[in-house]
Amino acid sequence: MNKVIVVTGVPGVGKSTVIEGALKQLKTKGVEYELIIYGDVMLELLKREGITHRDEMRKFPVGPYREVQREAGKQIARVAKRKPVLVDTHCLVKKPEGYYPGLPRWVLEELKPESIVIIEASPEEVAGRRTKDTARKRDKEILNEVVEHQQLNRATATAYAALTGATVRIINNKDRKLSETIKEMVEALR
Amino acid sequence: MNKVIVVTGVPGVGKSTVIEGALKQLKTKGVEYELIIYGDVMLELLKREGITHRDEMRKFPVGPYREVQREAGKQIARVAKRKPVLVDTHCLVKKPEGYYPGLPRWVLEELKPESIVIIEASPEEVAGRRTKDTARKRDKEILNEVVEHQQLNRATATAYAALTGATVRIINNKDRKLSETIKEMVEALR
Amino acid sequence: MNKVIVVTGVPGVGKSTVIEGALKQLKTKGVEYELIIYGDVMLELLKREGITHRDEMRKFPVGPYREVQREAGKQIARVAKRKPVLVDTHCLVKKPEGYYPGLPRWVLEELKPESIVIIEASPEEVAGRRTKDTARKRDKEILNEVVEHQQLNRATATAYAALTGATVRIINNKDRKLSETIKEMVEALR
Image (tube, rainbow over all chains, first blue to last red; front, side, top):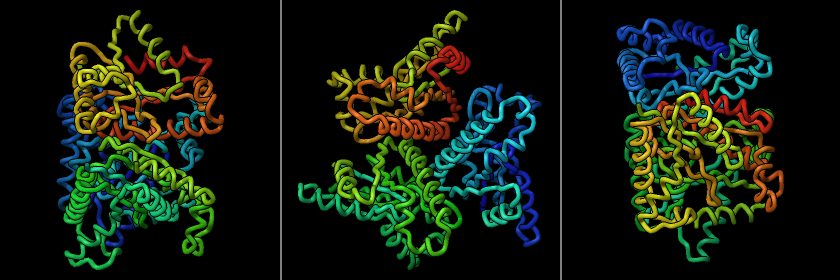
């Protein structure tokens, strides 16, 4: 089997809602996916190494950290041997120090995704869902950040595709058309 | 020798016309290229496996399909040992289920292209040449699709360049300036 | 240690000024970087092979040229074992025949950069600093070229990130806000 679909999207894009809606619909049609949040698998593995909180993850030394990333990929690939897997993760994770690739080469080599889905939304809608940020930053700054992040995610997805042969699928999530977005996601998971 | 130039462009960009024009001019100057359409090599190889039509290609199981892709790359590289080769293919092939990378890593490893040429045109001109689509879709939708596809092709080409060291060359094909476009393509092939 | 930070930016973006300013500030704080211009290391290595000028570099046969590129990467990685290294290079080098990837896969495998910094500026400011080009080309043409080059550099940086796990950091260099840009660069190097 080995069906791995990676689903990505910037914070505030509505990714979880779309994933949940799609998995629910698929279940009624007899299609069952294992939903795996990549960051959770990482955190679980890092706990064994003494890391207890998500924010501490990056303080871990680079070499061993990459080994843990690869191990997380391996674990997910093992699940995919018996059931289709939807991996909830990021093309690029934005941190103050820059964008981290969510799926560097050594993770992709394990995951072997069939498809990389990017959920996108208009910068305005994304900003609207990021209320905490809005309090701190000027609106235009957030809009520019979302535009930049979404543009870079697209480029990153094509690099992942070049490395793995995965398809890239862009799904537009419009506030008032959630059912359409979910329908598209259902198609992406079939 | 081993000169492999990959030429790409979205459907409706005028790729074949530009390639034919350039190869014709080069021939008069004593420069002979072997023109190989990557999809044709694939189809030829897949026929041996029982696939008879282009649309069936993707139903082929992924593992063996990739082996066939690699084999196609090998065959083209063999031709390139005795003659320069122009490979007519795509950065990304657009299908209803998403964008497929035309040259995933294992193909690039065989092809070792010297250069990846992207022929681009304005979305309006591309849309104008896609009459069948125009009948079905609203104009603006097609324009957005072309913008997205051309943007993603550029990103994909840079990923191919990172993997192979190939140069990326963008050639703009304007409706009324075909001879200029062909001239640029001739330069790209010299 | 092995800290390698790659700093890139299109010609005219003000890269050298920003790098110098940042390294100077860091020095006062006791942080010392070795500044290595990748092209200089290449030229030094190629001199041994009879190449005496930068323009001759590309005439060198492809196979041996790549070996020299890899060797340059190895040399820089050796320096990084004892001191943090800032590598001044390009995501894509623009030449009449197209864009060359500054850090193809085999170089990245040696360099193992922690971060890829892209210094960007508005096309207008970049064009303003390229006086020689301005004399030859129409203004709008230069602006379009800078937009294209900066866009492709971003995509290329994400491909490098996918291959290496490096972060991508974009720093905006505004003419009248040099001290802010330098401050951001200092943060990127900490």
